[in-house]
Image (cartoon, rainbow, N blue to C red; front, side, top):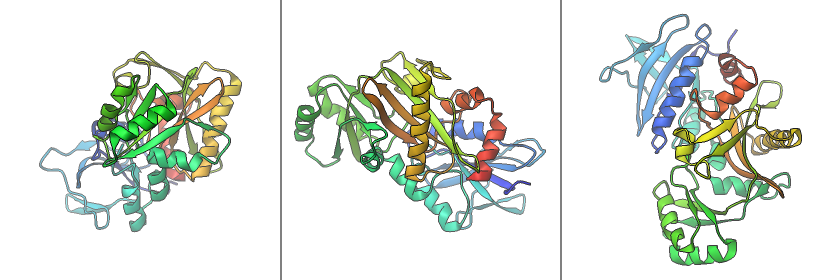
Length: 339
């Protein structure tokens, strides 16, 4: 018997990733077991939470037209539908970016005592911020970290850039510390381009990370989850980008190959999977998490943790699940029942 009955899938966000989040949320909602759960789709953006569709167990999906979408009561996370008050048992969070990946949404559910699909509010906050996450991992010897520099809005950008190029050299990658889907990221080949790249990163947030580019042989990614008994790693993927790195066009406009299982040695495959599980447990992760890496001759470099990885039909994690031979509906049930 299922632990929960009414599952709220929350998508949309307050960030540049909101459209990607909608695709992930709609895909996830459509694959949740239609015989076990009632599924409610909530579009949440800039404080407006509305029920856009619902599917009772063993019934057809019903969409609500714009202007007639029930508003979610945030005081107890419930909604009124045709005179019936529905209080959600479980939140499946598919918000990429703020507030779903910043810890704010997790904190809300934890205060209400409502189980959810992702890491705790604290772990989410730490893991989503690239600089904070790397800082947590610096003392560990099981994965390498590219040298970096941190900058905040209000700092002297010109002075920072001069010092950073002297210390790290070129090329460099400039990233918002708290963004995803490659928004705000620039590869910098010339020193004179670095200030503009930093300012571009600031369009996504108040802090940025500048990293020394790694001369890698493979770009690899691995998803990890808990099945109720142990932490498990899915088959890894190698990303081969036509744009030179895994930017927005490579991710969403077909300018990359995503090969699963990755055509690398068994030894490297095991290293990526075991490292991912160790990071998952070291950070205290929960639910489904994806880790990204660069493999270089001198070792495996950690890039970032994806607390809420993309879940469209073309996304990386569903490819891993299919390669593992796990039906996607069964996999989502595992996440729901063991989060």
